[in-house]
Length: 300
Image (cartoon, rainbow, N blue to C red):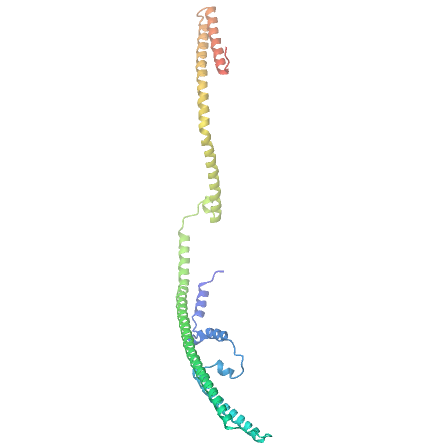
């Protein structure tokens, strides 16, 4: 269904209405895909804090948990020491500890402390490595998001420019359509009168159909002509042979005709006797006999 220029202008005016565009709104689909791709945490402890975590908040949480575990460890050691001391006092018999046992326990405690210190150093190194990895990951994610946002901004700008160009082209279409319609009207009014030949006023499909039929007829005639041309040499040779056979007969015919005319003339004029007449007739019959033998191919 064809649209009028007024309908096209109405559609263009609707497209040209101001729309609110911003980088944040354009990047919302991408951020939503990144958020869904990371997966949900399975722990319920501080779920909201970890989902919206930042490097500063993670560092504050780490410091808080360090202090909390230090206090818990001190309280645990204090309670265990009190429990062992009370059990040693109220036990029956009471637990007596000698100096040598204290020395051995202090040596074991030193070994355990050294091992614990080494483990603390290892844990500190692991924590530092994790912090570096986290910072690197944060920088990479930030660069990726910024790059994606920049690409989206460029794509949005290019799309907006393309829409502007297409809008300008569509705005010029109604005027072009009006000019073309006026040109068609002028050409229709100035064209020559229609021909009375029905072949010149046919539509394009009918003309193409007629052209195909004419081409088929021409191909059939060309085929017949080629067939006749291939048989022409044989027919020519046959014609030459018949002409060669006909020449002697024509010569004999001419001779017989002349002899008959001469005999008739003599008979009418009364010249010569019966012998001459018989002699002429004999020559004529011999000529006729020779012509017939030559024509029929009879010998003797």
